[in-house]
Length: 122
Image 1 (cartoon, rainbow, N blue to C red):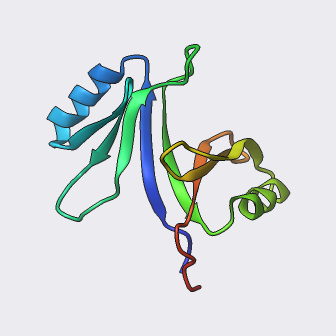
Image 2 (cartoon, rainbow, N blue to C red; image 1 turned 180 degrees about the vertical axis):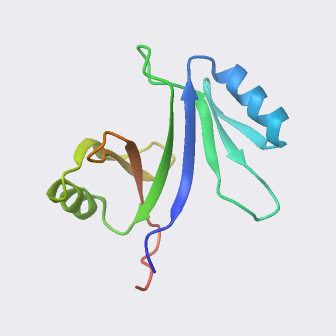
């Protein structure tokens, strides 16, 4: 089995506005997780959880990012770099959250990685 997409993130300039939009448009349960970020729980055990909030401090670009679960962030980033991708962030431990990393693919799409909490059989 391949590595699954396990999380998504939608960030922009107006965290509260984005959260209200997605709550109303899709009936998502949105739980505050900080001053400008909230976790999204689609509910009913269908779909994946995610986050909606502000772009990075200093006016980061609005973006949508998917996160792919891997067993070893450093190893995955090494493989990605060998295939023409570029490491953008991490690995790093999110306080109270998972270990993550970001990379760009050969066409400059930003994609996230999240460390698996248990090792999956392949």
